[in-house]
Length: 324
Image (cartoon, rainbow, N blue to C red; front, top):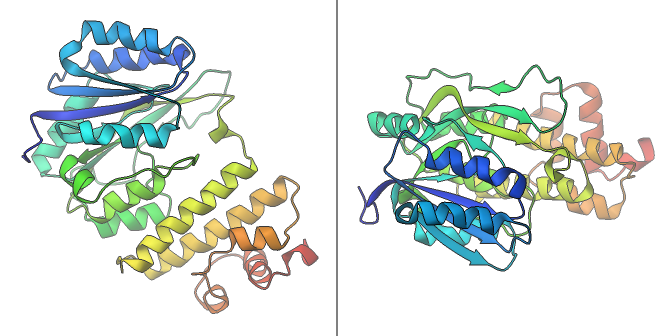
C-alpha cells in the first residue's frame, strides 16, 4: 500500500445541477456493504438544490466525506480538483445522475486484492428516465472473468470498442492515477476515453466482473445522447488524443486493431456530419482528418466494405463533397 493509502477506496463525484438524481446516487454510495471508503464531492457551481442534498449527507457522514465547492468550470475541472484529495489505495470516479449496486465496492475491492490488479472493470445496466423498449440494457464484457488480462489485450479490445472507455465502471489503483498524472481535458463532452486508455496502457493486470454493478442512467435531454457538432468534434479530439498517445509513446497494440480504429473513427465522423446535413468543406476536412491514416494505409491495410473504403479515400483526397 502506498503512503497515501489510509483507506481502501476513494470515490470522486462531481456535481452540477442534478438535484433530481443526486439523492439516489449518494444514498447508493453511503449504503454500501463495504465501509472502508471516503467520498470526495465537488460541487461545480450548482444553482439548483444539489448543495442542499450534499449537505444532508455531509452532516450524516462527516467522517467519510470531503466536500469541495467551486465556481462552475465543468466536470473535467471538478474531477481534476478532487484528485489531490484521494486517500484510498484504489479510486472510483462515479457520475452523480447514476447509481450503484450496494455491493459494488466490496466486489470491486475483493477482486482487485485477490488478483493484485491495477484496474477492475464491472458490467453495467442502462436505466431510463423516459419510456424506452431497449432490450439490450445490460452490458457485461465478453471475457473470462477469472483471467488476468495484460494491458496489450485490453487496449486492443478498447480499439475494437469491445471494452468501452467509460470512467465510472472501473476501479483504478491510485498509485497509477498519481504516478501517470491522470487528467481530464477541460470543456469536452467526451473527456474520459483518453485518460482511461492511458491508465489501461500502464496497468500490469486488469480483471473483470461480469455483473452489472453500475446503473447508467439514460437522460432524454443529455448532450451525450444527441448528435451535434460539439459532440462530433469532441469525439474527434478524443480519437486523436488516443492515436497520438499510442504513436508518441510507442505503445504496443495490434497493427490491424490500430488501423481499424482509425478508419472506423474517420468513417463515423463523416457519417455523423452527413446525417446533420453538413457538406464536407475545407474546415471539416481540416478538423476531422486523422493524419496517422495515410492513403497507403486505407488502400492496403484497412479491412472494410468497398463503399466505406471509397469514402475514406475521397475524404483523404478532399473530394468527398463532390461525390456525396
